[in-house]
Length: 84
Image 1 (tube, rainbow, N blue to C red):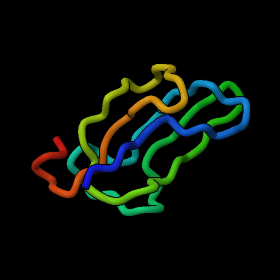
Image 2 (tube, helix red, strand yellow; image 1 turned 180 degrees about the vertical axis):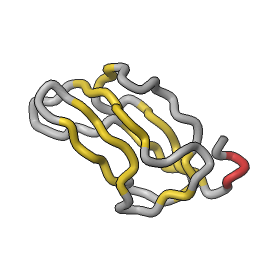
Image 3 (cartoon, one colour; image 1 turned 60 degrees about the horizontal axis):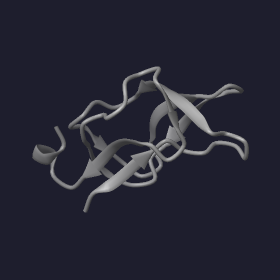
């Protein structure tokens, strides 16, 4: 089962953010609750935990690019060979 990783809304007024770093690489296993990436907004930079588990797929957004809340960032998949 695939799980979508999207730009989270980290505050009531947050409309966009940018991923400043990924703590996992595509193809690596991610556990639910594990810190997966950091997001920077106009007010704060914070770590974001995974809401699902699986192998990290291809990252869809470049580091530092500002994207709207809800934008697809990557996927978690059940099989490592489908994650790259």
